Image (cartoon, rainbow, N blue to C red; front, side, top):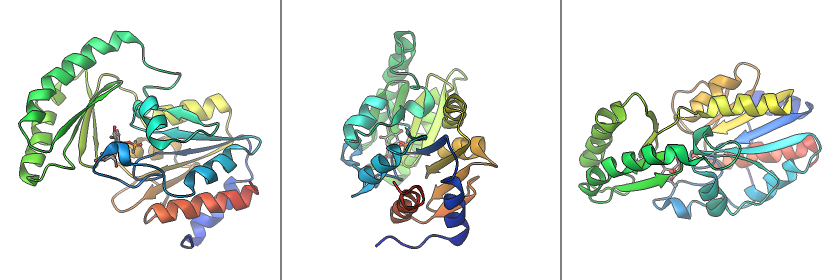
Length: 251
Ligand SMILES: O=P(O)(O)OC[C@H]1O[C@H](O[C@H]2O[C@H](CO)[C@@H](O)[C@H](O)[C@H]2O)[C@H](O)[C@@H](O)[C@@H]1O
């Protein structure tokens, strides 16, 4: 059974459910899927895909997945197939895959990062559509892991043409300045949404929380400072939010 929600959040969700058009947006890793050592193993929590599909089937409701992952990776890893809006690469993939003109800078960036990552056992370089991410979750030497992230930030990451996207055991450098906040506002405006919700757990989700404040229902998953108006402790709390919305929308 899902945990009960804070009364203020429950009331905000019930109120939100009355609005049309309505945008329901969520981050993926750490929100809909538990964090794993292997990013390819981060599949949705049981039942979450069904809840999202039920919400997306309601007239006037759009469900959007807004992730740091590339859209192709997000679709393949999640296995989700609902009629969702897919926004990937922290907002850089909005209308489909990125065009080729960014590819050269992205590939040069990955080439510069590769020897730094190879020098730290367990660290991993992820090649992404709009940049490259240095992952240290599986680096056993935590000092070396922290040093690598600091060196990446101070070295290649100091290039003003790049945007740093810090996250959980990861530092991504992106060749665009897209962010989740701008993507959410664009989506909300395109839909003419009268109300919007965003669920997120990580640093890059704060752009989304700030962009939808003060009117949106913004929900931080887990601990830490946040600009979100509400909080749930974990992924069971996320399921409780989705279930509450399904009930309120009678989806
Ligand atoms: O914006 P999100 O949907 O939260 O995506 C953020 C990054 O998620 C992935 O990395 C994170 O999750 C992995 C799987 O649990 C974990 O191994 C890693 O330590 C986390 O940082 C993904 O690999 C990145 O591309 C996303 O940017």
